[in-house]
Length: 203
Image 1: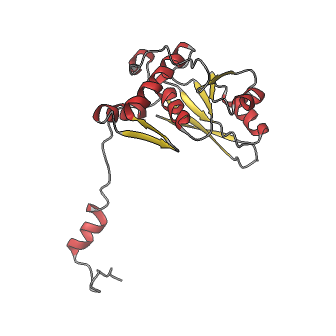
Image 2 (image 1 turned 135 degrees about the vertical axis):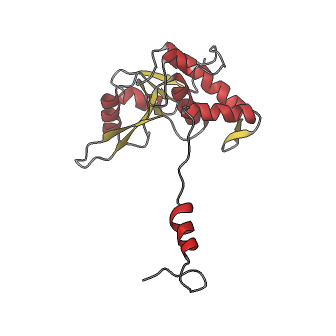
């Protein structure tokens, strides 16, 4: 049986060609860049535009990039490089975005650790993912220390913020051999057995 068009008649060969083939040509060429480099390109275009709004806090692309760069340089100094994982356990907000960008810019892969999860689940995730470091904030730092198995814990909003003395320039990905094929993040599913299962995704 033929396919009807909007007027209730049968589709012509040209209409069928358009629907079946022309409209379905959704292939696109993606540049050979990493996620954070797409963000950096936007920073160049609109550095003063608002990038993040959370409550009363508004952060421009330029400021967000500078903050993430400082932390990215710090993370590299602490051994973060391609395929190395960094846990992020923060409440939703600007620090979370800074942390995510910093990990990607450093070349590492982030592991989201929701502070609302039961401690037993968080402990398993940290042990299984073996992060080099866990980025957190003052509100969640004690929780992370309890479940962290001795992993280094750094507060993004702590006094004497460790990223403050670092360079604000974009870290070069070539210096650590980072490519778009490297691991970008590890996310844990519920797991069919009830045990969280880590799924690894590339940049």
